[in-house]
Image (tube, rainbow, N blue to C red; front, side, top):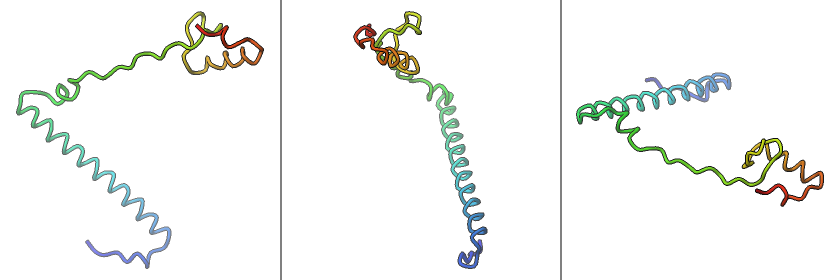
Length: 104
C-alpha cells in the first residue's frame, strides 16, 4: 500500500477519502461479525446444538404493565397509563374538572 500525502489533496478529495475509509471500516466490522458468527455456529454444531438454540434459549425478561393512573371518557372505560390519552386528562383539568375525579 502506498503512502498518501494528505497535504497535497483538496478538501473535496479529503472528504471523499474520509467517506471511503468510513465505509471500509463498516464493512470490515461486518465481515468480522459474520466470521465470528460462523465460528460460533460451527462450534455449536460440534457440540450438538444449533446457534439459535443456544442464543434463544433464555426467555426474555418481561416487564409488567404500568399501573393505571386515571380514567378517560375517550378510552371507553379502559384505564389510561401514558400516551396521547393523557391529553384528554389535561383538557379535563383545563376545563375545571378536579384531577381526583379522573383517578381510578
